[in-house]
Image 1 (cartoon, rainbow, N blue to C red):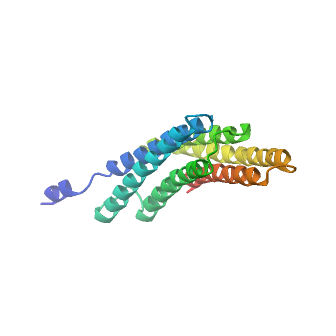
Image 2: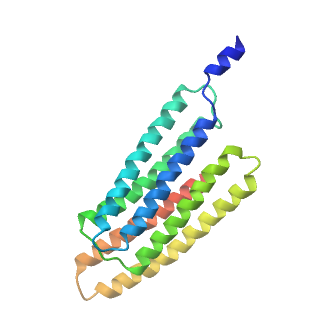
Image 3: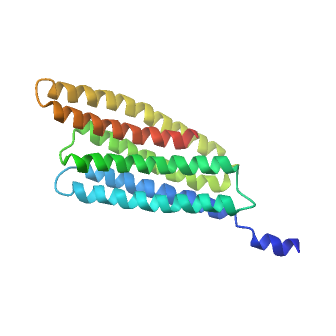
Length: 205
């Protein structure tokens, strides 16, 4: 009887697979965000791709939360599963907010420091994907998980310096010029910095 009952229980592995799939949307979104910040005629296309990735992430998040409610057995604490899922979702949401600002203000030319922040986001996304892959065997991969967390934390600290330098350059470029361009640029910088902050939330959560 117990053996039959256990066959009805969801496999724990599917949670890890969903975490990995969720992180995959962040990799795609970060790549699209970086390409959008190359500027030019294809900016709108890559912003649209971020929206597609955000919708895919929402679908995965709903699937995870539904599975949490229905499962007797989960790989770790349910609140931690929800927390990780929310952090992953918050990250792609922040990328979508970046794309929305770019689209709303019809920006197609981006400062080097904005592109540098996007490069950092791409690195963070790759590390986050590996982090979710290592969760399949947390005990064996504990050292690598700690290394990944430290790498993301270092990148977040680096992004703070890039953000400050970018904002300084933005101010110098517009202090005697177009105030609206300064406001728009500052908003894009803010969104980009928050993308990387959300990656750190995943890593240390």
